Length: 231
Image (cartoon, rainbow, N blue to C red; front, side, top):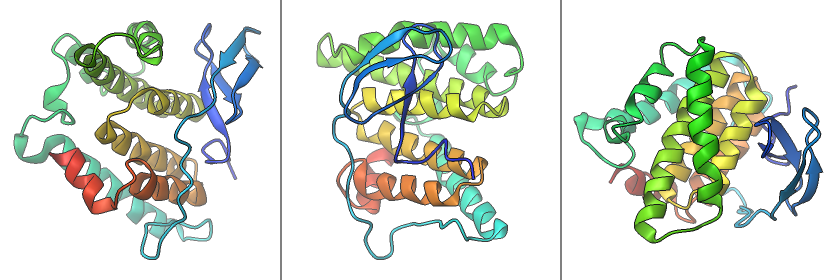
């Protein structure tokens, strides 16, 4: 089984080469296996540890392929419904992608095989993520950074998924998850991580991410989290 999406490991991005970097929850110094750069990683904050409750979504490793496919389709529909719900513009819908980023985000859905597209999106993401991680600026500036980094991460993870570079998909999503504070963005990233785990046929990991999605991302029930994301 591919364990690249296990919730028991932490995968971020090398600060030099953008390669996937497996690190500990406690942080410390970690050498990139691709470029050799030593990365200083801070401890993971707000580590989710809620115990799954009865009725929470769970996909086990023994689920049939049909069950996994149904769960995948359910998640995709939920995600699509929220992105495009009634054509309404919200912070979490495709309509709300910052105007200057729309060409990059939209092209990531169609021309993901072109290296130039990946390089442009990656360059902008790598420029903005450290600023977001530094927590600099006022709330308005931070909100704008979160918004931009979220949509760039969606574009990047989409490209890496089509390339079947699942470890980089995980690294981009988790690096963004640790940097953003908006519960709605966290809601979608947890869902993306669950979908990505299903892509590598790790139903157990998908279930673990769904549990975090429903009970850990915002500290509220799944129905409350959905209300937050769809507002």
